[in-house]
Length: 175
Image (cartoon, rainbow, N blue to C red; front, side, top):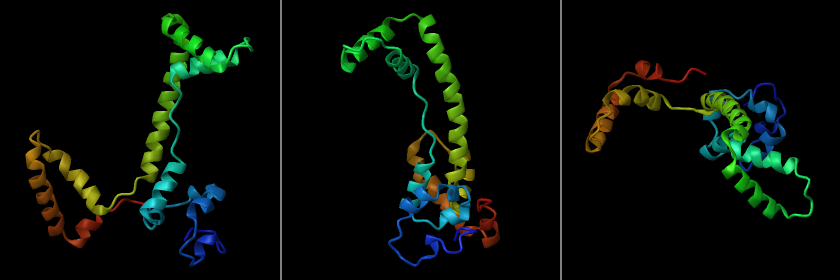
């Protein structure tokens, strides 16, 4: 249950509760969900939740150029389709100096997107203790011969089974 919502729709025992509709109306609540609360959601609902807040990739330099050309276009008689063809050929033949401001804008947006995407990925990635264990052990054993991977994975699974509950708990994500 989400903290601070005494009479919320989440307290209803209705199994057909449409969480997507609820979350779209109460998007500020999403920021308060902890990893433990996210773990309780079904995989489908978790995927919807993740995708709802995924940052959008920036427009490419070409897309920015086309948008600029349409915004500054004074030729109202030509169809948008013909204009697009004209702008595309302009982009192909444009010098680096003409493309530079659009490329610069794209690079800045791409750097910002990379930061936002990493923050989103960290917030909405919920792994089981076994997966955390696996990810800590597997990279050390990767071999170029993929025929050995099934053997390696079996060994890792056996090591996991041999751990005590306290050791397994140490691999739980900190919420």
